[in-house]
Image (cartoon, rainbow, N blue to C red; front, top):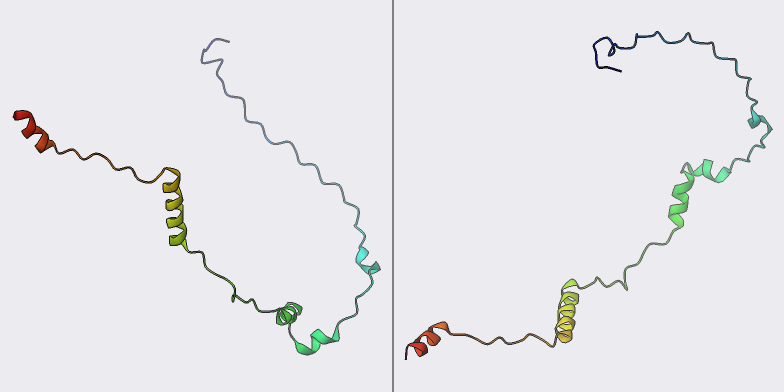
Length: 107
C-alpha cells in the first residue's frame, strides 16, 4: 500500500493462451435448388435495354407552366409594412439644435 518502488512493479507480460482449433461447422443446406425458376421475359431480351430504362420512357415529363417563383423583395417589403402598422409607424423625434440653444443661453 505504500508508494515504494517495490510496490509499483509492473505485471509480468504473459503470452496469449494457446489457440483452440475451431470446431467444424455443419454444412449449410442450399435451399436455392427448391425455388421455382421464373420465366424469362422475351421483351427485354429483344430490345437489349434494361428494365428501368423502359419504365423511364413511359413517365410523363414535368410541367412548370403554373409555377411562380417566390418574390423575396415583395415579401420583405410587406413584412416591413405590417411591422410598421403594428407599431403605429415611425415616430418623429424632436430635433435639438445645440448651437441655437447655446446662443439663447448666453443672452
